[in-house]
Length: 498
Ligand SMILES: Cc1cc2nc3c(=O)[nH]c(=O)nc-3n(C[C@H](O)[C@H](O)[C@H](O)COP(=O)(O)OP(=O)(O)OC[C@H]3O[C@@H](n4cnc5c(N)ncnc54)[C@H](O)[C@@H]3O)c2cc1C
Image (cartoon, rainbow, N blue to C red):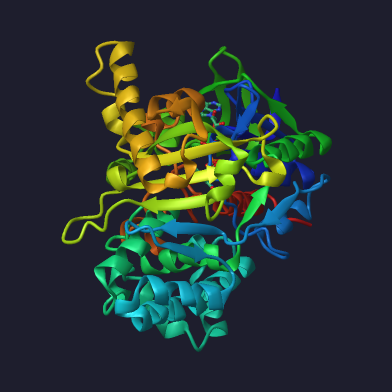
């Protein structure tokens, strides 16, 4: 078979690209290795519960933002979303809760109460950052492919933000920590915890402008999706099919076929079948796997190889719980980001001290009556789950230890849960690897340090002129909204909306 475009991988990135291209009249075939599409956004069922892999916090569903822009082109309805209030709560080591949401007065009062030692500096930090984040949102709405836009276009965007242009230019080369002077070590940890979740790296390494956008998400308003991210996956699959595109499940791609002049001419499947393309191949694999597997290391240019070695990603360790409705209601929010220790005088330790508790909303409990499906996510060094195991029992033992630690940490931080929760399942980086084939089961994109941000971003372009990448390891970064933007960028580059 031959298509204009073949998309390899049916995560949010691949599905959105295929849905947009199919709606624009391009002949598209999406090949997904699993029996179900969705990748990191796929749900899974256990004992009458339907669990989200993610934290259930979705940005940019406001009118006019990226999701509306995409669904405006598609022949299907967008999934139903509801705004969360607050977006999430950060629980600090002393038990204080800071509600992060769109209500500015409540947020300011929360900061003053939690950080009296540096309240003015903390408010100034947010006060300086918020207009920058808004300017970057406006710029991305006009030119989604900011990282590869021609210089004149970027200058035009800067000129449109004349009042902020100097701060944007200087912010490009700075870390978030640079802007935290005058704040206390405690406040910096409050910022570190959020940046670790939304930028995959804490303030001393997070690029300031990325941090501005990441920290503003909760303030602008975040949403829950009825049915979770899996409902978005289902809508995109339906859209591709309604527009005449092809979605093939259970279709693992082995490698890219290239022709004369180093142009992609198709892909070979594990079954031996070759699917030909006349226009482009879009890889929804991570940047490591696009080069390492699809292209193959022998065809990866040395500079790309060196770059890939420097990029860092995290693994996730998760527990999936059944929570009593009463226990869930006792918490200050369905999403609680917990920080267990201030770690003063030490480097930020994401692995031992942080977790995200995410309960399905009461109006969409995804569980038997009186229960709610809950996902608890922690960070872990992915590589250590792939070494030191002589057999499967080694992995199971490591899983048991991680579960015991996570369980204890969760109960210490959230005593309201009491005996109202029960563990149903866990997921380690090896499980993520099995489900998505991402390198070492690393999820959540790459840490948005200065090395991986702005002019240094991994963009959608590759060393082959008609091989593109979409997904959370490419610009603009991690999260469903960013991945959707990466898909719009690639769809626009292949075939603009008429
Ligand atoms: C613990 C956790 C919590 C998160 N919480 C949130 C949240 O609350 N809000 C939010 O917005 N985002 C969240 N995210 C991030 C978000 O889920 C991901 O960034 C996003 O789903 C990634 O999509 P993707 O398209 O980049 O890739 P993936 O989801 O990795 O999809 C890639 C697809 O390619 C397929 N594939 C791989 N190899 C092959 C092959 N050889 N042939 C064919 N197919 C192949 C895989 O099976 C997979 O389906 C979270 C992520 C994690 C891990």
